[in-house]
Length: 137
Image (cartoon, rainbow, N blue to C red; front, side):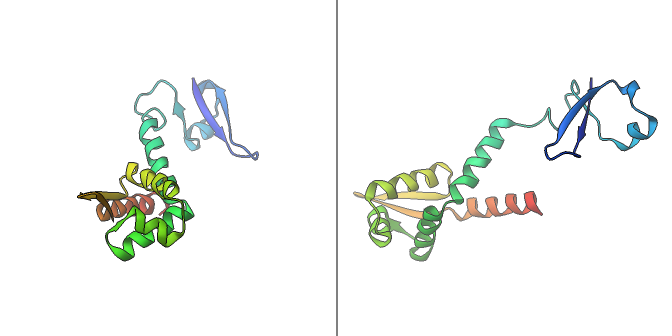
């Protein structure tokens, strides 16, 4: 089974057809996606990695988390208490957003006694910037 993607309507849709139903011009000019070919682009998509990448980008695409990152960057090293006081937040709200940033590996934590200090993971930010640049050009 071959697939032909059509973009003439508002939403792209896929036509199913046999290769013999296509003219020679269509066969040469149309990108064919073979359903059974393991090496085709759609078959090689790692959906789990795509989902993880979306979660990382979503972690950065939030105004409050961007403000938190700006404060961490300005201070280089800061506690959750200092963050929620500076942003006038509830402690639980600041902690929830920091947890999202931690899960995305955007911030690092260092425990010193009873305090946990947050720092920006510069390496991760560089990787994300490269990924976004490669993705959108």
